[in-house]
Image (cartoon, rainbow, N blue to C red; front, top):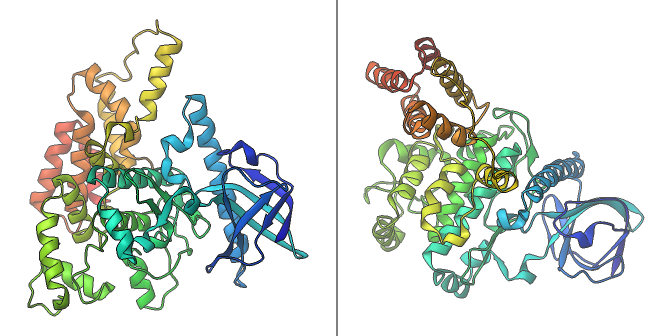
Length: 467
């Protein structure tokens, strides 16, 4: 057993047992090792066996500052977790109840000394000890797959729901995971909705939606197509916040079917998939095509029959993401859209209410005689309001879901029905007409009609069509 002398430590706040730490005892050798660090079983913390079993990840350097990057990323992410935990605590909500997919997130981050050298790392729950299994072990073990397929479908949907909500929060944090793969996704094989995301140190926190980061994980089939394209061209790989959207869509498909949505191709390479989506509409393919893998024809027949039973909204999320979002990343299904489509399909006790609803309920409980809210805006102010909102969403300075409650209030106050749904429809129309980089007159007229009907100013419509 080896001892890490802790020089500096910050608890995330998930477990008060880790609020003050001076030493950590670990095994002599790591049980796992990757490009960014070595992972050890934790035996003791402050010379006492922890109530909740932990693993310790110690960052390793690749000679290009990877350890420093990992530590900076984890600390930045942790600070955002701490803020969100406090926000939820003020509403009487336990963070891991509201976002259960973060059960594998860092418990505490530290700097210390080990074997006479300075080290940096973090602790996280030992998911295996809590009954989780890596999804890689589900795919690679017939016994595990058999257990997994016995889980009721509504609970599989709940796993995808919680994963999508976790990434929605990471997006709120402007964090890119950049390495979502079956090794980093853990699930329970029991009749429950448990899933957990791990390995946050390979990502990055960025400030703007269009910012690039050069951080990414390892080559695997959940990687976004723009990463494969850069790899095949031997370019320096850059990712952005859209890259994870592709990976989450792939992860959700794996959760549903334990296969990639393009498993029937001979190769899932950038060139092969590009050729496929230019010739076919997912999930269709001509079995005489050179792209088709004839060796899995029986599996493909099963898949065609099975995918048709998927709820229509989910089917459309996959269809748009694969067929259109492969090349136009703005068309990928967002995390919020996944959660919205999955929520009606999961058990009631798995659903999580919008925080704004919880805040309003708490305000009513604290002040039951609270007056009816004043008008947010007048009819005269509405065109400026809705025009500025549409521009802000298209330019990625805000997201539609953040304005849902406000739009619903304005709908009622100004007698403008379903503002939220109409804005959502307008945005979907916009992304559809820009998909091929050209806007014809029919598309222009359709968008203009919907915009005018919504109340968007003519000069704003022209500005949007030029973006």
